Length: 428
Image (cartoon, rainbow, N blue to C red; front, side):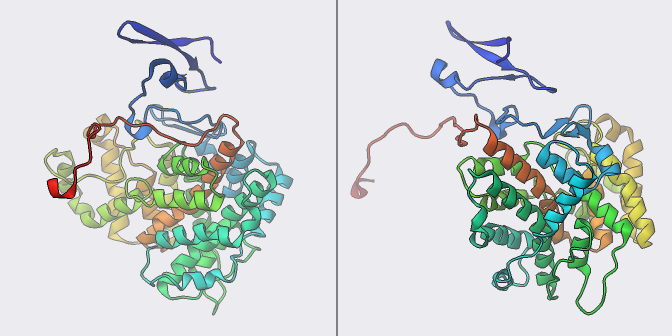
């Protein structure tokens, strides 16, 4: 308990509450006893000013453009680490040595296969089903196939189910893509890296060998790292809320996927790419820039600015470099990508965008890269879910292990009718 206190004065009454201090970031008022003391609640739509939990996983300073995983800057992790290494870090709290990383990667590779009966499950969906609809259903169904690891009170069960989710998500996502295009699902190849294996399962076919492009593999690995966790966002909060009831981990992650599917959360990179397609060619950019500045025009530049980051998105710095590496490796020549690079150049030098801090964010770049690699826009959010699974799993584990965690039960400001008597049908 902190030494500081905060005083709330309501009329003639005053109430004192502890002020808690984290290792970094804003202090918080501990209002757990507010209702008991003052018979009042706080009102905070979207919980944007409320700390719902204590966490040691990820820290964001939006004003300074800082994103830390277990204290490590995201730029350093994306530049020097791998997704498997970052996954180990989020799950265990420390970076692994070589032996620990090799052991973790081997464990994940042993869980990449899906139960063979799930192939039948896929065939129950229409061919034009959205990949996120398929992922919601399949991940939720995993508890019916792997009920030997759903005892959340058992640390070993939690460990196994965490590994299963991280390992199977690429297989599930790739199979959703294959099903949508009418191609046979590819079994995992555990001789490949986590990301290389996913690329092969997505773009490979049984009729011929698939060669992983190392530049594309590195770019995808970076995208996975940059989307691995982002503190208490909507989908992570959903996973925690579902988990607070004691639901099994597969159901909790399925809930996170459903939340991520929303266009205000996981669909931003698709929206950015659609905007670039609307603009079309570089010569039309000035016209759309003027439209974006016009308050009366509904057009908005998607992929610029961020709700949390009021400075440059630290993840975008890494992606800016990656875009060029991918374009060069794949010899991309497309007006869409030329438009993106020109738009980025103009936005970074235009006083209007600089003043309003509307810098390109990670969604602006990731959508361009994924499209260049060959992913349809319907797969963008599914790839986001694949990467974010490790963050969801880490938060779920942290929540289950927290002795102070209670079932989520938000309060409300009731504005409906006061108590009234029932009126018989004939008298209404």
